[in-house]
Amino acid sequence: MNRTFRQTALSGAIAVALSVGFVSTNAVQAKSVTQSAIDDDANSVSNVLSWGMGQQGQRFSPLTKINKGNVKKLVPAWSFSFGGEKQRGQEAQPVVANGKMFVTGSYSRLFAIDAKTGEELWQYDHRLPDGILPCCDVINRGAALYDDLVIFTTLDARVIALSQETGKVVWRAKIDDYKAGYSNTAAPLIVHDMVITGVSGGEFGVIGRVEARDAKTGEMRWVRPSVEGHMGYMWKDGEKVENGLTGKTNATWPGDMWKTGGAATWQGGTYDHETGLIFYGTGNPAPWNAHLRPGDNLYSTSTLAIDPKTGKIAWHFQYTPNDGWDYDGVNEVVSFNVDGKQLAGHADRNGFFYVLDRTNGKLENAFPFVNQIDWAKGIDLKTGRPIENGARPGDPSKSADGKKGETIFVAPSFLGAKNWMPMAYSPKTELFYVPSNEWGMDLWNEPITYKKGAAYLGAGFTIKPLNDDYIGALRAVDPRTGKIKWEYKNNAPLWGGVMTTAGGLVFTGTPEGYLKAFDDQTGEELWSFQTGSGVVGCPITWEQDGEQFVAVPSGWGGAVPLWGGDVAKKVKYLNQGGSLWVFKLTDA
Image (tube, rainbow, N blue to C red; front, side, top):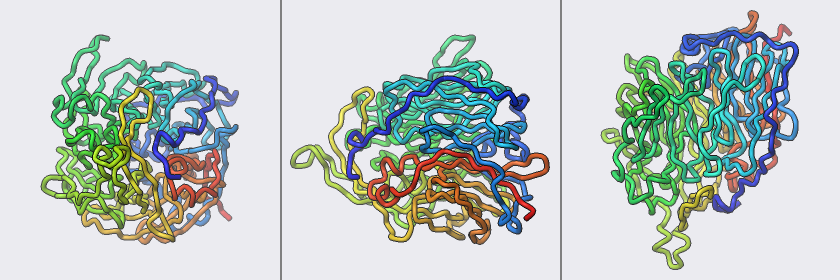
């Protein structure tokens, strides 16, 4: 599987689905989901209203009914099939409100389910056009709830708001042109009665940005580009007005490269109530061939702290200036407080874990969370910049044939020490639980020019495992010291989210099909269940009618089987699927 991006297919053919809602006659009556309830989601036990189980993204539940002492009695309560032939890449996190669960599926589908019984209430299948250009499978990572609406984004770069009660479309909006490479897969964020979304498509030379719309109507409020040199806008009385240039044109980009600069905001964001800031990560600069774009290439591979009232950038922190490895910077920023400090944790694809002061973006600490990092010796804690060691692929323009630069081997691979799969933080143990991977890649650069709707990389790669016995590792990381308290090693890459609870448990899934529960202090595996396909979704937990439930989607897919090189060959035996599993305790 030695190939460039444009040789690799986006060959998983995109089936066309119908924009139809199917409604059960036994639908659970919808109740209004208020902004105040969303703001308090992290403390809620009866609902899960946001991606991250709280806008701060900690993925921590205060529930204790399922705990270390009884988790071995966890059994399936019900299972739900996503159906049809679309069983591939189920990376969603469900949300729950008032006894109803909403979960997205591959190919831009959304299901409403009775959370107690597993009965389907309605189904929405978005009508996808021919020619969409998703980078990394046909996945969707989840929906947002607001008022009587459930809102999600689609592979053809749309935002769709549906009635929670019926599944009928209430409003829809176009993010951008899918023919230019724009798409969207992230769960929206609800802040100040606005729905906040980003864009996917960095491998096609799109312009990354964060957008805010009125959550009730879909009307635009503001847009903030994430590539330096582009103008931000606000909407006042329905009129579009300029809201300040992002950075300074050509300050860190040469020539016209900023016009197709990437920095896609494809992961989604978090919101911190104490600082009043939205945190959004930005992806790789385009193209991958960094020889074509000397400079830091702001604001790629960064976290942007954005004022939700104005859309202006309050501060930024860049993880990998002039990124030449596709390390991105989109991974989630998780708010946490220790020793009286308002901090944020970020486990980057480049292999380093960052602790930032979330009030101003100042670097507090940075340390490796994987065993092998070849591209840099460390992070300068004074400047925040990586201490590079020269491990960059060669410039193809200086090669003998002008077609391929010198190949290097470097770790981590471009799929990252940690990719999109969200970590969890426990205020009880004051530890982060980080799903990580140990792999490297052969990497080389090639000539490339921008063409609308075509892959814009200028690079080739082959991903390789670093160890014979494992690739994935779930690690309990102390953000104060950088020490790894415990780890669980897994044969296949870890590609699903993590959840932790006040019951002393850490839940995550494996591509081999298991949902597992670990002791949060020791890492001892206490329980597992085989779901029938790889678990690359995000577990949640909630309480209903006096019982605590745990849910997780199952369905192998995502970027690994598409771009995983030798790693993809190693795990090619894994079966795809499409189902949702819900568990509760038994008295037996």
